[in-house]
Length: 220
Ligand code: GRF
Image (cartoon, rainbow, N blue to C red; front, side, top):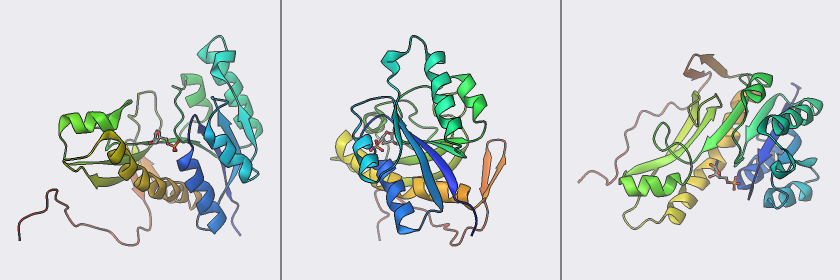
């Protein structure tokens, strides 16, 4: 059997994406193992989830560090010691330094709750509603030095309803996050990602889907 992809997962909060990754691994649909989970917040509920599944966790409280560089140096040390192949940012609310990006070059991915390049940054569901878009969604992408600017691996689209609030839209998007993040990690585990600058090709796609979608739906 091929070796399992070794993950280091970084969280700051609820950890529902973390949970979805754990569930896929436990179901046998994701050939990966979580070597370590690191939270920058001691209160993150994701830590409770991790403990329930007996996964090694570390808390690295950014308030205990005098600079971003010091924090990242320690984070690099922890992740290197754990021997991870891929760093998965799952609701991790810290900007990473260039040294961190260099230490794990092309090995860091993030999930963002909007259809990038629209609405990078924070409070993006509200931004999507304020703009009046008819679709939003989520994006898994490589992490580069910009904010949510790295090459895109997979996206999922959801309709925006006229009576949506930031919360109802976020919930609809989150459901999709829980599907595409494990899928993106599986691409890595199976060696199916070909990276050519900003362009990511995924090998062996089973059901190419070329259908357009409309919101509101076309008449008739
Ligand atoms: C998700 O919406 C993710 O896209 C964003 O932060 C949220 C984290 O949710 N980066 P959770 O902690 O995985 O539940």
